[in-house]
Length: 373
Image (cartoon, rainbow, N blue to C red; front, side, top):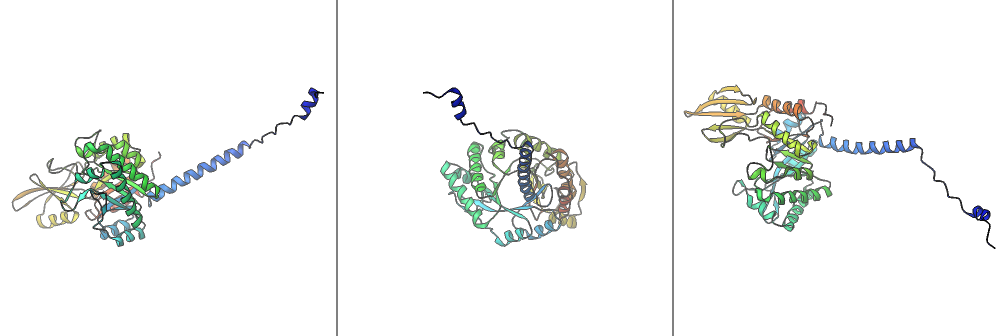
């Protein structure tokens, strides 16, 4: 006969009660996870900004005297050695490679990037044919990205700084795709990627250089988005400052609408420019010293805070602008007051600077408290 309802109820297994974790335990575990994540992020940040809250980096061809001065001033976190050249067939070459310099920089606690350029040594110019050949198809982009990544593995550098300055505006999307491909390969090797971009105040930009660079897309792919905020004046403009702070401010304003501020790096020009009519010559600090010694120029401090020297040579009138240490101070102060959340600065080029600039950079960027995000 069928069992009674009571007996069925007695045989039915009781569901096991799930033990609930105490709320306090859950809170503690969540807190520990959050601390661990914050520690990892902070460690990465400390490694990037090795000696202070803001990154100080500089491009170099391997100038040991300048490296020594920057290290002694406590004013350098990393260098980008401007050696690696892209070739139209997808290969790379580094005719100026100096492995001893890489070793010395590392020994002095300075991280080393290699700069990848589309520069043609035979023509002494950036060559659009190089990028056009590499960007032509997904396969040519992949092949070149692998060649670059392999070079980085062989010479054990921390990352790549992409400085292709002759990309045509029509190649904008292909260039972004290449940077994304290269970023993926480098990140898989625990390496970093930076990209150097022309300054602009809006998209797409006023000429081929900036038009070839999609700031939003590039900014999402890279670890450092280096804006070349210099070369404001040249043979195309007549005499003027290399990088007036108010113009740099406007460029960074736009950059922060396109790219996460923590990835943005402000470019600092350490060189000057001399005008003879419409002809220009780039100047180093040693050039300024020679002008002072030979020509006894009249000197002014311009609104940009850059040094202006006026003098005559062989009867011809010259005007020369140079960003000495006081001018560097003004540019960095603008960044700190107007754009405190950017990553830091990158300077072109080691060996051209007023040596006192390193002390200014150390005092302003390695002794400051970081801005809160």
